[in-house]
Image 1: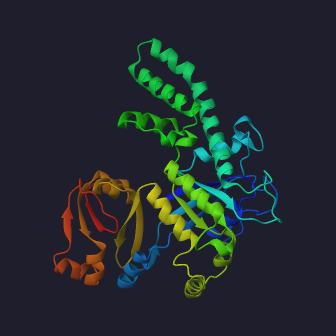
Image 2: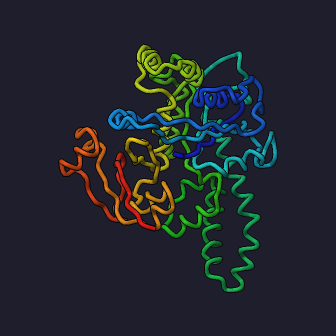
Image 3: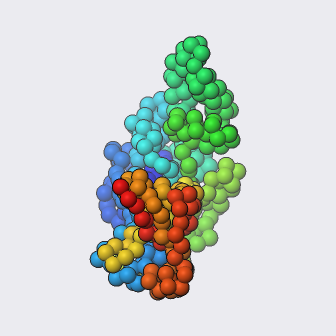
Length: 366
């Protein structure tokens, strides 16, 4: 598994259309009215990575297993959701379970598709959603505070540190500052992470534009990009309608030709996966052989022993060494045997920091 990403936004901004396109199916009902998605639909999508295809060409394995993004299509939030408006807290709860938030914002005009606020204004839409997330966080922290204050009175030092951080967060939230924007030391960040607050989730803006604006954007999407820059939030521009058309093309070469006609280098899914990996600071390493070529997702900065545990706990517990070849050396040599003969295989210890694209063979003993 790569990571899971919750697709959120106001009703009728193109969330379910985008979800259907990304997962290449029609699980989510894309209807022209609010709250058509009653339960969060979940779809797993293989991440396109040309490297795994080249590794498979060399090894001719029995199976090739890419890494995945799990998309969760969460029903439209509305102003007042934190107080139970619309479908309220049920869906705020769904957001707590995801690694990152993909906030879809409508950046196109269409008289046939109603807007819940009767105007196209992605900046206002973004503020509505962000406010609801922050209000939900405030409500959560207000409820937690009394119990922690009781622990503090008993002399509990950990509770005191936690209370100090919570009060700091509350002050920021009351000033309209989302938790992800709060700077802090390592200990404070650990406490914040344990609180699992909604506005602490890494977020990505998706400007859903009309088909003619995919390449260069439009006034709506440009304003959203500017907002993202002020909040250190990355914005990607795509057309959910166009992605829906692309998803219907099953042949890889035909899909590429269609994108070429539109003068697009990559699809919206690829844009989203690249941005998502960057957002969560993720990288990919590979295992490769005649039985299987497989991609594995880890945090950037992960050491070899922890990476081994992604494959199996025994690999980590009994870790001896990691025989490692960089991707370029592996491909240029034509595979493991010749790379090893050329001296490109390195024997790394448990503290070796895995690099993106490393091909690894773990030695272990349990």
